[in-house]
Length: 354
Image: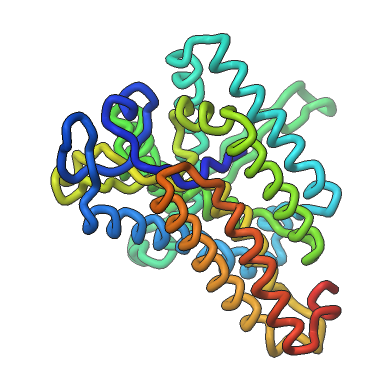
């Protein structure tokens, strides 16, 4: 489960070393680093661009996946009941992690989490690369089929535990993904982190479906309350986000011009601020009632612009007040409000919610 850590304001290098996170550098004034306007603009612009990539391509891949006749390719559908329970489950998980970090050594917890996300990241990145590999793989190289099979018992009682079929192209994707995974484990480099983060976000958008618009509103509304409460009402979200060393956020350095690829002062965006709104945006690409069929992409582009507007508002408020912001505080009203206004203007509100 990807926890939404929102956008984070600048903190100084001492805090960054203690907390494992940070933003901004440019020139040093005393012990405080101040971001240059160029570094700030590049970092925030890059975060917005990276956030849009998994939403756009994940949505398109999800629609193609939904049209597939292969049942193994069908995505998971989120119902209204799932959406209502999700903020409660997320809250329990978040508070559980908070207690773990308070009771046990942060070093050992992050070691376990690193290994867990190492495996997940390899699988997610491999799945993300697969369609691209299918297009560029040379036709003159023979493709061999492989099967990984684990069974339990024998004879009539034999039961399949794992039955995974793959080919040469999948093997190449796994090897490349494993190299990225080793790079991330050894160096925790921000580029490796972003490759895994983008893969997680794209898979989250692609492989989760909402069964109707109302479910999306319930999910966004519940997480709106969840996000605001845990960020503004307690220190739980910020504490976990600062302690949690895993590729569950996209980062971009504000000191790239000064330090190049070795930069270490980051602006960041939680994957929850991408995947959850992305699933709601994606819904507008699904087959619609006949009265809406000509307008479905209108709603998608409207929602897409709403997401950009909401994310821009988050960054502006965060940068102005120098305080961490729950991005869903701005994304939820925008992603729900913009399409509803368009539907009202077109007289299609009832049809949209069908």
